[in-house]
Length: 116
Image 1 (tube, rainbow, N blue to C red):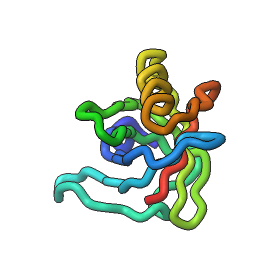
Image 2 (image 1 turned 120 degrees about the horizontal axis):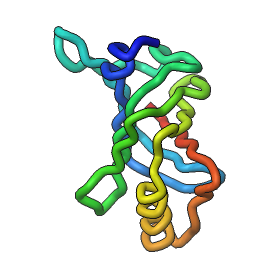
Image 3 (image 1 turned 90 degrees about the horizontal axis):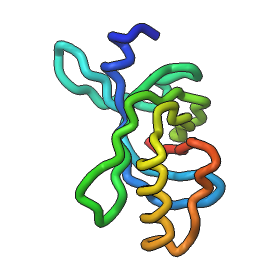
Image 4 (image 1 turned 90 degrees about the vertical axis):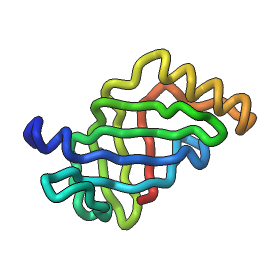
């Protein structure tokens, strides 16, 4: 995928649960000269590069991940590997999970599974 295509696809989602991985509910957007359009998961394929904006419930600031790779797509589910998740972002997600969900986040990997 070209850099132009990369900057035009984003996933905006809200963290919904933590289990073996982070799980979120959200939407896939494609930016074009015609404006922002909602896309279904079938629009993506394994290997696509996207940007991710992950919102944590009850928090005002999102976690913006500049570069993530689509691992797989199945029905309404998309698994993404966050390639540029910083230690600060991981700590923020971990602290939120421990505080609000009363369970630790498996931060050893950077996978988010999104229902879109």
